[in-house]
Image (cartoon, rainbow, N blue to C red; front, side):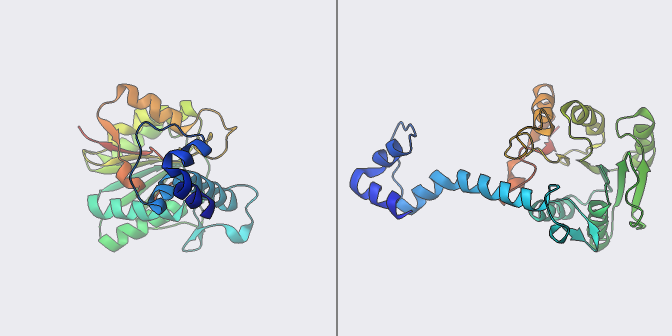
Length: 251
């Protein structure tokens, strides 16, 4: 850091930019500290994102580094969980529809927030039943393929015309995620959200060899769907595992 400050002092901001090989059109008049922070924040953010992800969310992560909600494993970044509780408090939806139950920690987290506000239920869907330990009066578990017509019909019957937030966290291959988005977007209320989780994979910035996944599905979906837009305000903690994944229904 001191080397960068010395360069700015001797050669100015343009000299620093030349050293780090960044093209600039007009000089930026900011303090050295603010300039350096802006210049390298993306690098630091990406590095910490990778460190956090690979520490807690890969097969390499040790058992004592897993994340739990009331004793149930939940594969979520705590910063994103905080955003979820803000959304639930603000919107007070009748339902959260979640695809990808896994161990059930996320469903239990949502149900716990609903307990605190006194309203709301969770519908959670998974092709496997790994969540036997999770039983809560606000949670309805559905076993099956999230994109099958039978499952969609079940959800329709439960939801009716009530309000909902949709959370997509099952199969992370692009085609599956895109199909889920097309099907479950119909349940999202005006000014509510469809959250596409794990858009960070396939080098955004983790798991570079994954192949087309959630991020690519979001891009494809938004090409034709003008009733949704990315809400970057939900990424206020800088680190999120769902970059560009908070989709707000605007019409």
